[in-house]
Image (tube, rainbow, N blue to C red; front, top):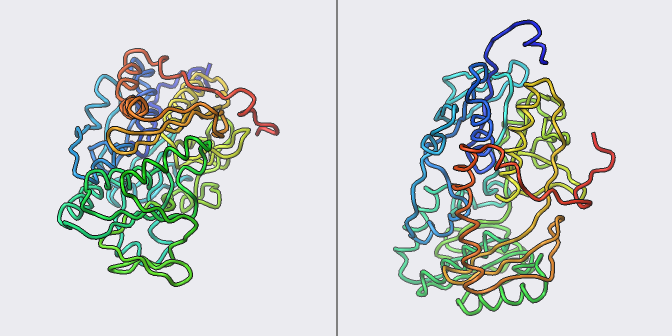
Length: 401
């Protein structure tokens, strides 16, 4: 029994969740669904806008395809969570408060920090001024308008990771009148097995995407991209997908962060410096047996659910359990009717098994649409959200905190 119950205290325990991405929304729905019969727990979800950002589909928005506009308050319906719209401008970890829009202050007893990553536009000169990003649906819509007005010319996609590959393929398919150049340090699909990588490359070739790997952007200019070494690549539009950064708010609050600004957590996802703060999704540096997790929807949602479960256990006076997660696939769309799905070991290394073509495209679409039924089930049966691959021996952390 908790100290509050022993003392007969019935004060409300205030849980504030920052960020309504895949991880933050999972945390809020899971927690609010489990405590909705309790008058002593208040769950508040804070986000800058009411519209949910489907990050997995932003490359579609960027090519003018209309998607359903998902409303966060509607996604929370059926739970006890309340929604607060506003920008988080400061966190005071000592006073346990969050400042919203520099005007409002929200006190908390437990904080779930899920302010995820955005494109790193600060490291390379000219990116902030001359490149487009996929940080939000609005950003993607601005790029879509630009592409629709070009009528011809060259689009450079800087960054050969999965976001860059999907974006380059989508732009090339929807705008065959444009020349699409994909630039990056690594070869596209570098983490896949050789056959899956070869399929991905052949699909890009079929779509007319010109791939330049082994190159690094030094500067983005008004009408070109300058590479390290001095070469310039003409560009009528530049989409920046190379590298991410997280909000500096966690570091400014005095929370222990890693070299990338992510909150360092213990095995239960609590901040190592402030145990009343849980970090989820891209905002957290979460150690597993294979190393630090990287940001994906497949891993982000389980971190949110686990944080909620940990909070419930703590409120009952129980010790939260360690978080474990193993990767299981890497689905990559290559336009609307093609894709490659690389199945992985729990440490994200490639298996021999992979899917391609229309079957892979249907698989990718099922994965992309899976959060909505998952959240719907969680609202009715919260325990349904607590199933994900734990990763076996791959995720065992020796010398755990």
